[in-house]
Length: 306
Image (cartoon, rainbow, N blue to C red):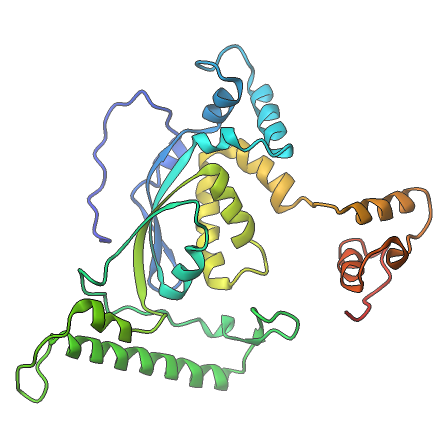
């Protein structure tokens, strides 16, 4: 599935983005054996503007006006024009990453079938630098890296387990004779259940730009698991090449912007009038007040316990 001939070049009248055309078909490495490959795309910045204006062609609008319209759409969450653009990717990823990824149910997915084909002998081993302890304040995240000695021990276990499971997988499929005798092969759909979550799978993943930006807003976040964030970083670079005006607006209003609650706005109004806001009196919980203080340290009450 990973061996794909380079696309033939054809004259086309559809919108093309030179910076993105340059990476079509290129497998961009992620983690130790994974990759993201751009298969195809539809639309560009101009397609979003065209859809928003419900007109034909570029018309008489200037580039800066197009940029302003895209920023308006992003700012006011008018999502439909962004749905006019699509991206199709070929992704090779560990099974546990795929199980996180598939939670984004707004894409079209076709995964490599281990009922039909035999999975490759490739599995993910974390770099020791990202092999962390359980985070003390995040029940589903990791904290600082473990010691080099502990990392070596854990990586040895992961490798040994993965290797043994694959040997048994091959044996169940009767791909190799055991003790010189032929054995019946177990069905592939059953043999595959022995393999651990760090083995690699592949899929084609097609999604519109609106939902892709939602995926990136979650998976680029510092709280996202490192492994899926590594894939999001590669896809984000493609999106920036593909629709630079959209990416700029997305970065300003989503990635590096902020959504304020009613109570946070009230606190900022207090501060604008020269008063230090009493966050608890305004109605914030201790956790809300703590998070507000982390965003606006000069206005918060300090690091209260939650």
